Every structure is written in C-alpha cells, then in structure tokens.
Length: 127
Image (cartoon, rainbow, N blue to C red):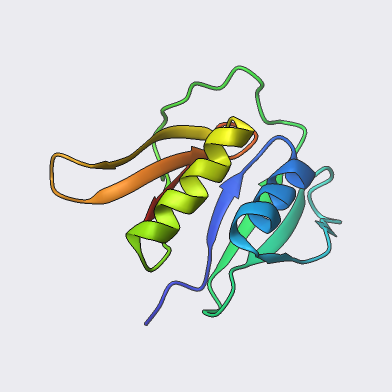
C-alpha cells in the first residue's frame, strides 16, 4: 500500500503550479476542468525522481478569509536529501520572500525549514 497522491486547495492554481516548478523542479499537468462540478479545476504536480504527486485544486467557493488553521491536513514535508539542500532552498526562498521559518533544529531534533506557497500553504523541507 502507498499514498497515490496528496491534494490541497488553493485560490490561485497557476501561482501554486509555478511555485512547485520553480522551487522543486516539478512538472505540472494541464488543467482539468470538471463538467460535473462547474468551477472546479485541478492540476497534478509530479515531483522529480519518485513519482510522488500533489493534486492542486481550486474553485470559486474558496473563501478569501479562511483561517490559517483548520481541521484537516496541515502541511506536506519533502525530504531533499541533505542539510545543504535544505539550506540552499531556504536561502532561495528567503530571497524571494517565501521562507516562513528556519532552517533550524526543532525541539524534537528534526532539521527543517518551512516555506510557503503563494497562498500561504506551508511546505516543510527536511534533509
């Protein structure tokens, strides 16, 4: 058994797709527009060398004033392979204004940084 993909809602699917391409060298599929649910659009992000996928989803019903914390998945964590890779990506994100925290060793001993997608969704990066 394995996770086939993870999915997340975003208000700006094109900005979210560009984020995954720019920072994680992902490939992003063409938009799918649902015929059964008008306004629903999704795009699949494929991460390099692993086949892991993230489904980006959007729809006009998403609230612009949604609270940052809600019931459900909080973030995705991606292992980059080394501390140096975390440091390099964190610095790129700092320069672009999307580094939320770190890099640091957490209280429970993990090395991580947290970057944010254009809509504020957190992505944790680890070695």
